[in-house]
Image (cartoon, rainbow, N blue to C red; front, side, top):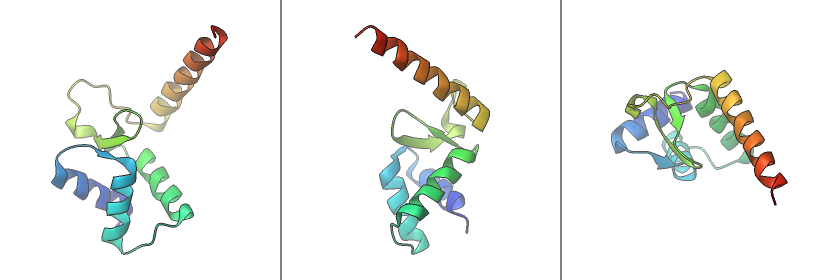
Amino acid sequence: MRATDVAYQILKERGQPLEVHDLLDEMLGAMGLDREPHKVAQIYTELNMDIRFVCRGNTDWGLKEWSSHGTARGTVRDRMSHDAGEADEMEDEESWQ
């Protein structure tokens, strides 16, 4: 089973978002894998690329199907433009300090 399918199943069973480290630990445990940095990075990238998932805040991940107000960042392009906007906002805030 793919890592993203495992993540989907875990979140579906929980019925609520999970902090990314907890989600990764559960995924790796279910897959019988150790917490190796390259494996964690690969899985995190797969979560980012899979449109079924949405980052809900800084560290919580949930399922896009739970989002009723359409704010889920479902595509890589949406995420990139959103992240770029956040970076611009941070630069603006830093210039005031």
